[in-house]
Length: 490
Image 1 (cartoon, rainbow, N blue to C red):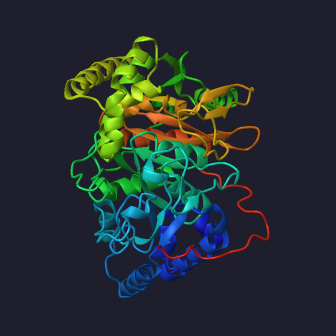
Image 2 (image 1 turned 180 degrees about the vertical axis):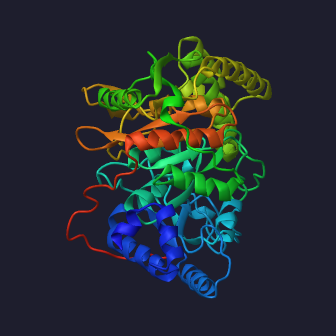
């Protein structure tokens, strides 16, 4: 069964339809694999096994009767622990969110209606607000490629579960790289869709928060682009566009931005991929940053923190308000967009400050649309580094990450390359394109034009054929690891 569990969802569904495996057998195989490996990876933090087994039996019975079934009928799935599941409220890594009466989030309801067997929640960072997946409630999630490293965050449990074979499809969300960073770190694919394409209803937002978050999107994660396309048809009724011939494509490669770091080993892999595209007939051209990178980053951080400010408690908000004066002085003295000062001003942004940032967003969008117009898509790094070692000390503002050349970068610089697409509401597909010499996955963003989700995925499908697609982690778990079931949720 391991082979089918490492195949993509499309292949698993074909096996189900052909009768090579039943839904009950496939689900049990998933449970067995999670029992074997997840005690160490810690990707799936809560299970609804009884309902999933009942749903699997119902799918098998309906298939035996020859009834028409949904496109995901019998496929086991997990979802990020920010989406409510009926009877299994999302925790967002915080005990205080448990115990609620929960209905299925809109995204969960859609995959259920298509026949998927939703069997568990995958781990996140506390409050879904870090580039790692760890919290005091469920602990640390580890990267299947290297247990000493993070799978990324906040959808780290989701990406690890896909890479480890616990699920072929996942549903995550992205406001600060939370889909793309974990996908890149774990060597899987994901799609950040256009804002509003997939409903946010059922995300465990702060109590009383009813509005959709600015900048936030819900999106699919998988082991292949064709699976992303499949899940997007379920989540958003988006039709699949045909894969274009490689020779018809003109791709811009954005690798050079003086203020954005990139590890030399990551650059080498992406440059090699660009060379392979050229060798296959793709017109490849280097592109410069389409707008002032630091101005773009400053605008993004203001809008991001303003969007997240609803989660601040009154004591924290009052403290930040007291710091506005020193923060403004620090910015006058040169504090940048990733500084504590900009953070304070973003979290406490006044309405006129938000309006100014939103107007700047419109200007950046116009510049980016003009600069990227000659290209079918833009290829860019996801992050400056590959998956880094677990680091839960200090604050995000004080942490540092090591580069392969001995240099160091600030922890928060993980947002540099992902910010543009969020600010400009551009669809992005991430695919793995190679590995560093030490065997860690390297991925790229394939950034499309505004509103072109189907076309961006189609282009990604063409480029994936060159890159080679998903590769299972070669050494998933040390031999002799003890296996145990995930404990029930408190």
